[in-house]
Length: 287
Ligand SMILES: [Zn+2]
Image 1 (cartoon, rainbow, N blue to C red):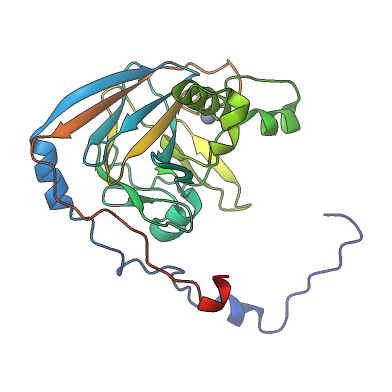
Image 2: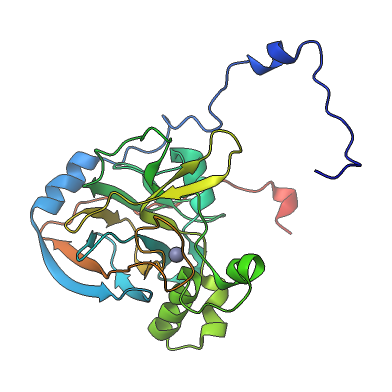
């Protein structure tokens, strides 16, 4: 803090002010029911229709039709992945990690939805299975599958450490989306957005409130699955941080591929296509 900063002196009722109980910003009991029983029944009869590998320190995109399930697995060693989602028919509608965090918490779990950006704000996907659900909250306050971090990127790396590193998740997702759409990376870079950090174990330090990471508990065979509520393009980067036990944005960490498997239910669940919350601007704002 600069010396010129004015002093912050606690008022006489400081303790009283601190003891005011918190309230949830977004109580979630009125969210639409994800009907997990219906989804799990559909998953039981689903068959695998495609798979791909995301190479270490690289990214891939794939199409996902409404009604399909996708399983993302660790296969050769502990590895975290950065996930992006776009609505296939309108790439400006994309995963809204900030509002997903506000609605469900800092880390997502089975039954949570992955919400899209305004003005849509609809469920793009529903998380249906998580082999790391047992992890819960560790003694440091760490949890897995965060919607806190944004994605490692070469700009922050340059700002903090100098140099140019070319395999950050931001770059991997940009390059993957460019290949998927047949465009140049510069044409699609702005489509890349804040992520779901699959398998990444993170939290905030108790003393300074800073974002921390620790070695992911993911092991080969672990997976997260979600159900596509709408037609999607998904993007996944196998983060250069590997298990994110020490650092990222370099070639120092051991990195492994991630496996993506898409499953088609024999009897697709009958679900209403999410349409957002139906909010209407006042008439005076329409012109
Ligand atoms: Zn990364």
